Image (cartoon, rainbow, N blue to C red; front, side, top):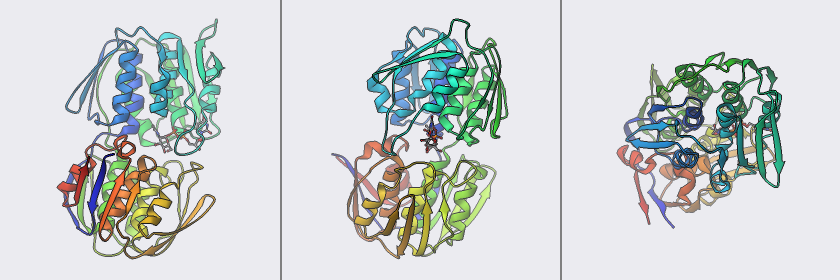
Amino acid sequence: MSCYEIKGGRPLFGALAIHGAKNSVLPILAACLLAPGQSVLHNCPDLSDVSATLDILRLLGCQAEREGDTVTIDTSTLDRWNVPERLMREMRSSVIFLGALLARLGTAELSYPGGCELGSRPIDLHLSALRSLGAEILEDQGALCCRSCRQGLRGREICLSIPSVGATENIMLAACGCPGVTTIVGAAQEPEILDLQGFLQAIGVRVSGAGTASISIEGGLPLHPAEYRVMGDRIAAATYLCGAAAATGEVEVSGIAPDTLAAVLSCLEEAGCEIHTGPDRIALTSGGPLHSIRPVRTAPYPGFPTDAQAILMAALAGGEGSTLFVENIFDSRYRHVDELRRMGADIQLAGRAAMVSGVRRLHGAAVRSTDLRGGAALVIAALGAEGTTRVSELRHIRRGYQALDKNLRLLGAEIRELP
Ligand code: UD1
């Protein structure tokens, strides 16, 4: 079983260009289905989640080719509407194909995505919204069969009780195939939704409001393929910055809008790091042990991102003083805590809260990635720890990081992959 071997305590220095955003590219790849023909996506990261999405597109009859970070999708040969269970299991976010297939073909069949490492992850908001747009959805022994009703799909107002990222994206995609105007009230405001809106506009959709709580989509218009550049991955950028914060040093990440990481940057500054930003870059300098900071409460954007909770926690666990974390988005997002404890971390859990008491220096251990960001957190902890750490279950990390080990080596870390 392959693992990363990391010898901690080396400061990080240098600059990195951040790859395209996983959470943008997945819905954008599904959105390619809306416009028959050949769309071209630049800055498309080479991640296992992206490969799984390309496999789904191929199984649906599309052509998908990668050359470097450019992916070309030809959806003119789309001739299937069912996503096999195997691929649904591999990647929960493939539920996004429901909205896209419904809009293009008026029908979609896929299996229920079920729970995942972060706990139960219902899709009730996705399904009830699609039903209000005119979809008939049968749920039968884990299968979801979705068809437009006899009268056809129709745009309308949809109010979301939780600003779900996936539900907002699924509704945006389905609404493209619904004549009339769909308004999403209580929409998620994450930057990746704005990126999806950018691609939809490029293929001819009249959509506005992304980045606010109210998004409006005019559906039923003829659409055309387009060329588009995916935004940079703000969570990958946060990961390298937290790595430098933990290991000390001076690191600059580029290809990323600093505003999209404001909540994380203010925590790192409060912990004692120096931060400088330019229009598309962030530089961080860290000189010594990180200090404790005010409570970190995860929240929908522009609040502190749940995807950065584990990585900031890993950096602070090797600092000094106590910091309270409160996880408000997912019910099971502390699975990395037991692994951090193996490295000497002092973290007390009580429901949604985690009290991290910095121990000044973690130590190396054999640890296991429990999920994507939990795995990245272990790498960060290892960079600042004394001694050697082995992080296994790299498949989780590969879902969201392109060449994490190579990039860290460029910054001066001692990390290698063992077979
Ligand atoms: C997306 C991101 C993920 C990030 C999360 C929150 C992608 C591919 N993934 O996941 O990295 O951690 O946003 O920023 O973009 N919920 C319901 N019913 C639903 C849908 C969601 O109760 O139908 C709940 C979830 O259980 C969770 C909360 O809403 O508690 C937020 O989930 P959501 O925003 O939908 O996350 P994802 O889109 O799955």
